[in-house]
Image (cartoon, rainbow, N blue to C red):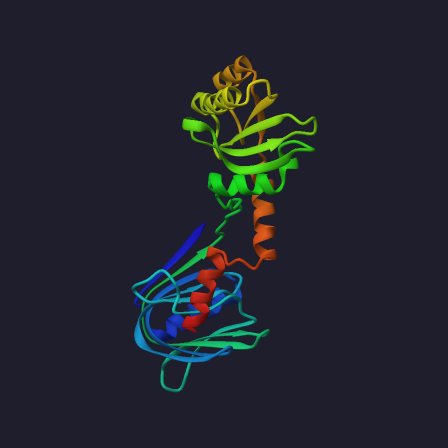
Length: 270
């Protein structure tokens, strides 16, 4: 990555630097003193103050105040992005979005710092982490992810004084199934926990056929050996598949996510 840094450049220099950076789709950060006017879904005026302005290669623009994590003004993308000195010698950075039409204009009276980054790369996969309760609920709603023909009877089934098994089900042959879910690699402790649940079930239901399944993304080799020794089973969970199902069902139910909440906070600040 190449980085250019300009400390307290005159506005005329800042204008040229920004014009070139915008045309070449560089990543720009600027500490400056500015006011902001926005017109679009609403209309707002933000008085002059010291701000951080970020312009990304895809045309996204964010204006941050010195406090708080959410931008006070923002554009998700820009069809027009320009920098110019007006007749009052104020540097105007203007972002125009076509659909819906929105215009964000930062009027800059002083620039403290500009950084221009070229060649930034980020191809990492974003993973939305889920807790065990969320994973359990997806598996309970889609028991075929564990085993075809599985019918869930209850979630959070009490097992005497041993605690609560995550899922209690019946398989296609009518056998009772006790399932313990882990969101990380399962170790010996998880195996022992499942065994306690199965032993409790056997004591309370003598003669009833029962299976124990440990469902997790992976399992340690010592835990796998112990599982086989106890006559219990392991089912590998595909967390990517589980996350995909959870995300799809959240969208279908229009349940707000953290990202949409942050987005609404940003929209309300426009």
